[in-house]
Image 1 (cartoon, one colour):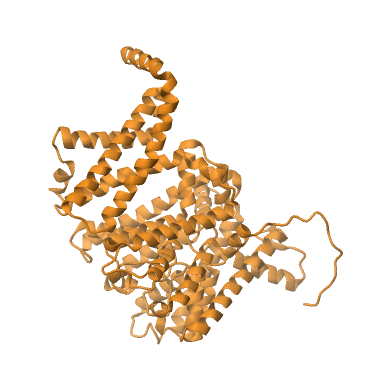
Image 2: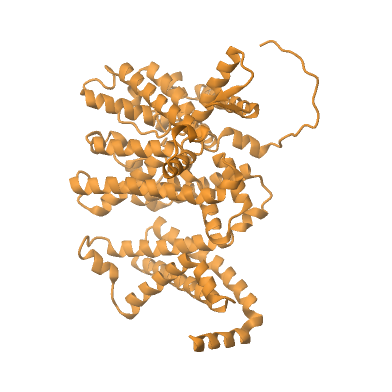
Length: 594
């Protein structure tokens, strides 16, 4: 060890003056090689390949991995405190160790680990799985590289709300380009349909202008799954997580998260890690529950790879309230309709994602501290109470109104499951186990109200939020009864919060009305179907009366805009493009007839 240290120090002394230059060159090379390799991976998956082109792509990826391993070792070797650098970059070190171990076993020891493993379990697609795992290593490395330059966002002169707005635009644009590549679809897709599908996935809506099951290939489904995941908890959250994990966080990231989650600025740094942990934790639990069931029953496929992909896609789509499925007829597929188990797991995932990260955080913390109900945060109590009330009202109403309509011919248990499932999914997720194109107009109007209300703040769902709806009810009651302040859970609510709730509702009604009005001028459908479609887009719900594929290009553009506004919320968009005024004076007051 002493000999190694002396040799290292001697080399450092010889090249000490050149170390900053070496680090700068390595940093620039990292960006160049990352860009080239990402392009190669996109080309490999997006376009038809020959044996020669596949080998070239594989070599480029492997060379890039070796470069990142070399860069890590070089930075650690020439760092003033080598072991301190290794301890502070443990995750990166594990990735590098995995890469070097794989290269050693494959090219030096001539031992194929994947082939050995899959000889026992599933001998199909060994080379494809190997390449996917190598690419996964690469993307983990790229994420680490991104975290090192994350402070770039702090230099951008744009407000946090604007950064949130921009992040979704970038994600939607990337998703559109990926979905238009030849290998993502069976026979191609139009630009407007690619934009529509990408927006729906990124905004976790679920409306589709094409049949997901027949138009997209397995690669296209995988891209949709990634877009749903990134859109559900937001790419800014990922960036913040990486920045916090490696470089202590960024005030700009925290400001964006405060805008997105409506939480205190002080809590966002540690809360970011909780968001990522809760998301992947719930999705992992959902994946395991579905995967074990599908493998035990064999109802879907005899291959565990197929079962794993379906379980992962379904778990991610359900928790993020996205409403996407690549099964024929989606949730009306016999696999879902004939399984109370899958429906129950789906319901639990939807509710978990819909109550919001703030509520989950408070519940977990309260269980850990053994706190009672009255000690929970006001938002948590309102979210849980309103979620339960709305689910109950929706289920009972659906059961009664559709008893002899879409539920006709079902047994009692099926009717109950269909009612509860529809009540839960109509506010956020967009899954349907009954034909929503055939429901009564009274049920349709009730669902429109539920879609506008939406999920909880800081969740993966849309709408004006259940807390906003509850606050509006309390404010109306306070006004009617002559109270001087709005109270909730023995707490007074500031009037600026009440005003924000009114503004949210006003903007929501305006967007839905304008969207519906425009579509009635251009589309040959009934008013209730158009209203249902627009409300579903704004609430990022994804339910449809069946008119989405038949909309014109102009109408699809309107729905795309509404989905986007519904995901980022209209107020966030308004705040990002306007300058807030801070008055230093007060005008004389006057009365006005109401």
